[in-house]
Image (cartoon, rainbow, N blue to C red; front, side, top):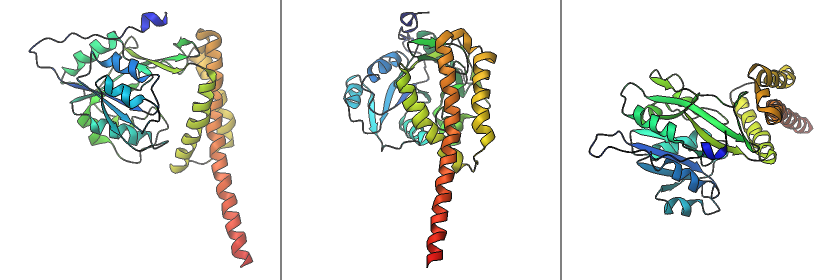
Amino acid sequence: MSRKQFGDYCEVERTPGSMIAKISAVINTLNEEANIADCIRSVQGLADEIVVCDMHSDDCTVEIAQNLGARVILIERMEGKYQMMRYLGVQAATHEWVLAIDADERMTETLAQRLREVAQDPSADVVRFGNLFWYFGGWVYHGFFFTNDWPRFFRRRVFLSNWREGTLQAHNDWEALDGVERTLTLPLDYHLLHYAYPTVEKYVWKTLGMYARVEAEQYRQQGRKFSFLRLIGDPFVFFWGGFLLRRGYRDGIRGFILTVLYAVYRFAIWANLWLLEELERQKQTNTVGKSGDE
């Protein structure tokens, strides 16, 4: 399937005079001038308000968003505190339903129409759907990368009442919505388009560099300890699980490269956790040494 076929933005017709549950689209941003316009345009047919929660971007993200009619709020930069970023964005929304979408994601017409229907249904509080990733010049349909477990559409009050400061996730950070009883999971036909990693370089820098370090720090805060067995075992399990059991091979060379990089990401998490513990041991040794000298 071509990018053009997937890339049509949504236009949802609204019935004049009907009682419609209103929707806020919330977008967290930092230096997203290359993406923000297309993201906003993709949700304009669905959302009654668009809130851009920006971390003082250095580029023209804020100006572009405002010119397209979005309401912009500014928050401090907080690397790794993804749950807090999401919370502040949802808190700034004013409508009953919230769509959480990132700047490099695009709404599709099929998903938009289904979400509008669900918003009128009193039996659901959270909606999970798919996120189709664009990796290295093409869509990825297999492995661990195309699933329908993304809880990105939900009632604002449900998220805010379940959110607790200090919940820890490096990304895919919606722990506050786990376990909500009235959750609707849509088939994979209903998905966002996620233009995540156009190049290998970006994947290596962001995932193996930043995400692996942040996740290791969060493991440490959770009290998890370095395991040599996990260091060598996780990459093996995730590679064969993704490439064979989850049929990553069906995405060809792209799928193979991506699965290898994801296995390295799992290795990098444990390597970073080992380093954190090693630095702490060295710090304690130095402290004891100085005490002995005294």
